[in-house]
Length: 69
Image 1: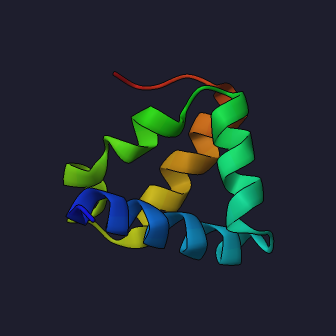
Image 2: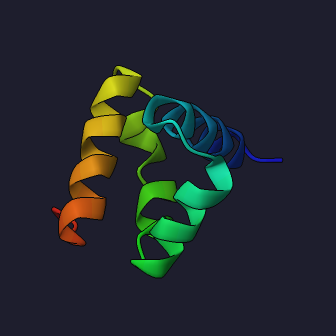
Image 3: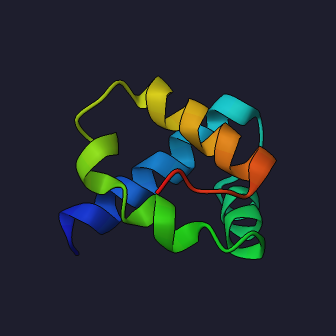
C-alpha cells in the first residue's frame, strides 16, 4: 500500500469525522463531482500542512466543483 493511498484513506476518514458523516459518503461526493483523483494527487501538499487546510480546500472543491490548478 502506497504512502499516498494510506494518507488518502486517513484524509477521507478524518474529513468525514470533521463533517459528521462517513468516509463512504465523502468518497461518493468526490466521485460524483469528479474530484477524487484531484484530492488523491494533492498528497504532496496536504500531508505537509495542517490537516485543517486540506479540510478547507475540500470544502471549497465540493462547494464549487472547481480545482485551483
